[in-house]
Image (cartoon, one colour):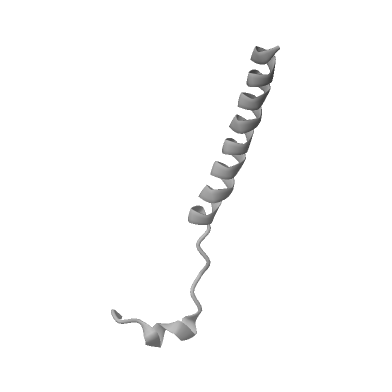
Length: 45
């Protein structure tokens, strides 16, 4: 009985880990374009 509960807990935690990793990585992949009006505020042109 303890093994079945532990197995279920492991499956749930693996699922949560996969979902959180995928949602966090999409933030790094999505990079919105900067507006052209911000060009005058750049230090390096």
